[in-house]
Amino acid sequence: ECLRTLLGHTDGVESVWVSTNRQRLYSGSKDETVGVWDLKEGSLVRRMEGHTGRVYSVCESPDGNILSGSRDKTIKKWDAITGECVGTLKGHSNMVTSVDANSRIICSGSYDGTVRIWDATAEATEPKVVGHSRPVWWMRYNQKGDKLLSYAADEYTGLNPEYCVWNCATGSLLHTSEDEPPTDIFDASSAREKYEAYKYGYMWRGGKTPFDESDISFSGDTRFDGDAYFCEDDAGRRVSACYVDGPKIHFLRIADIATARVVKQISTA
Picture 1 (cartoon, rainbow, N blue to C red):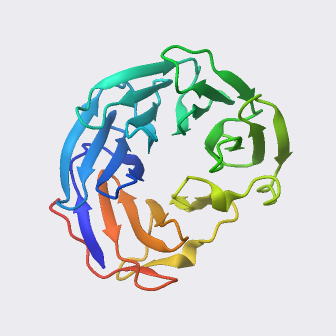
Picture 2 (cartoon, rainbow, N blue to C red; picture 1 turned 180 degrees about the vertical axis):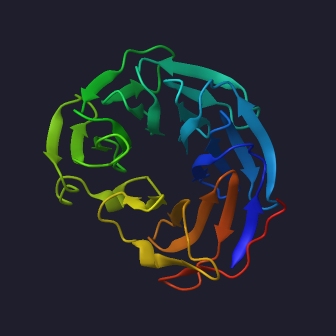
């Protein structure tokens, strides 16, 4: 069942993130803005302007603020209450595709082939820079915050995948492979990242995850070209899912342990 469709962006949505308290959803869009949504009311609280390129990644930092990574090569930090931009990190030479943070560090991945580890406690800082040989598509750190997993591959095709595990304190490379690292190297189940898998076009990213394409089905038109996001609670139970269709965000009800099913699509378009 489609619970709600959020309308407010003027171009395609690239990324979504549900707040820790489950009251807000943050979205990054091709319209170069970051959206803040009230999940109870289904309304757009604000759109935050400041980037000069499409916003590829958004996340909530532990202090409750919002981080966004953009095609304009920067990472911006936003006050979640006022919508004010309270900081901008510069250093990447290509678009920022992924951003995440804990109480000590901010991590960013870019198509310039680097992952940068910034000191979240300092107003101005030179990041540790670690490198891939290909564009970085995404990255995430483990719950403890001492290791970072990054994924790189050829631009557009996704061929020649490369997984790297880094020491966040030193920036040293701990592991590299073409497949996801074993759990004794990096335990993905302990990562703060809540979205375990998503689909872009017809290609699944994220390697071996608890989900695959059969986990979500649609009534009527079975063509599915958007991004699907699955959200888990702390016990590892799937509690919500949504998919992105251009500028629209559709929330789905998890029908059972295996399937999220759309029986009606709500749209004012």
